[in-house]
Image (cartoon, rainbow, N blue to C red; front, side, top):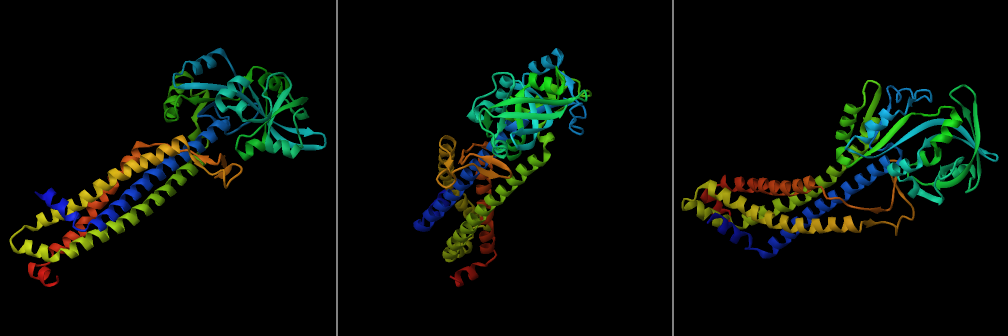
Length: 407
């Protein structure tokens, strides 16, 4: 009886009810669509960061990150390789060596970071081959690929001779000439301006450290399994001799920047909630104000106050449930469009869009997070039901005479 009566009450003023339902539905859809877009952008930013060079996890000799010296390397033994290959949470890995040098093309020169890699393994981690915007990938000895910003600074083109000078691990002068065969764009300013990739064999000859590396970087089978991947690797490889860390631990500043941006998204969603809350409260206040005389009569004939409260709350419940279901459908459709087609901003941004130092393609794709969707729906229903108590309690504080008189 209570649900039936409440259902009839919300349709007494059909125009107001429909407008309110549409507003709530649009609010829910905006929340779900906003979360879908924000979650998708964060995934794109995380993928850009981890694809650039970091990977999902890294292995170094103990203490390397505190003292990233070229001398602080470790031998790539069969046991080390086996430990990584037997980790079921790892989908791909690559080993790297790092050194710093002065690179020159004719009269132009710049300080660079030399990275020795296995071309095929590195491509499986960073997709470096796909990021070559001019030229080709590493295929032969004495070849290098450089970032597009570095190429601009050095006036380097495909085929340019890159002269590299540094100090080798045995104290001798490390110098050699390499041919630029490719220019890449990773979307990270520092990487595109500093990095020079060469085959690990060329690196070992240049710096006189054959068979030794500084880092193993890898990718987990899924971004949500990074911690499981790291914990498993610690079981397979001695954590006293090696530092095994996730990208969150390696770059806590970037991780906190992502988290702080996520916090700003909560503020955006909160604003939507407040707008919808104001509309709901106004609707319920007007609905009850118009029925003061009716409610006064009900109180006069002995209807208990808790039943009146229940009736008003159930009215709000009907209102928000129908609206939330409609908003959920619209929001999921928006997420579907974002996932499959993305939000294309190429009509206003001809190049990549930079966010917190990370360059992203001007097409943002969405992602469905069930937790955020469920939270949005539950919070909307809970907020509406809670708001209904305010006008209900205001009404029952009146005596039947006051309710009838003020009508």
